[in-house]
Length: 262
Image (cartoon, rainbow, N blue to C red; front, side, top):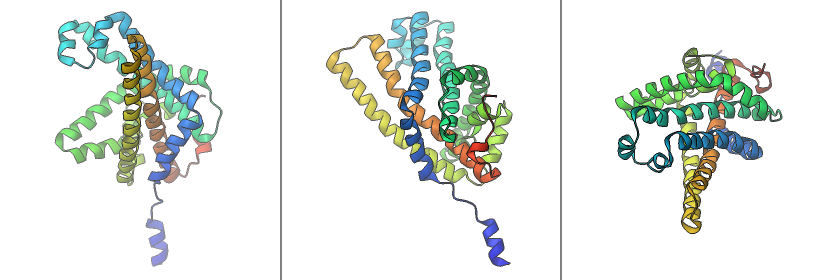
């Protein structure tokens, strides 16, 4: 009886190393697809801001004080809101692509764009709520903020895959229960890995700029390309966290997960 009870209470391992490794493996196994899906929205938003607000605003992007003096209130709102919209759209694209990669389905780029358009607003709204909750946790103390981040780690994937709105927050809280510390460990390791990768890519881009002397347009293209790789890997990581939780909590195999393109 004691052995049976003990076996029942043993939780399956989360698999931190497997998820981190698979995030990189899946990205580079379909590099052209993931790179395209992360690169195009980022560059499109940068070019749109350039056309609407002007070249000078792009150059002042790293100087918030000067930016506030240079732009009008509507332009300033647009400058900060448009990238968030682009990020939400790109995130939806990446979730869909990672989902297909995880189940071994061939890439469906056209379908990703079609579906992501319908998911962008829910992703945007839920992302704002999630960021506020995490920020409140960080204001209280670092650890509560990180714990909240782990608790809500499946939220965006739930929005895209399960077509939920704010209910995705509660769904993520349920899925992550009992596994939040391993999830936090996964997120930290993944962030450290992509941070190093992003630093290397940023250094390469800066080196190219200093040696060759590129135009603003070329700089936008280079930085969008450099950010596409770490952003894509992170997006895949969050999808894998969600898929692993579904496997553990619901006994759902990846192949039997809901069809998100129906």
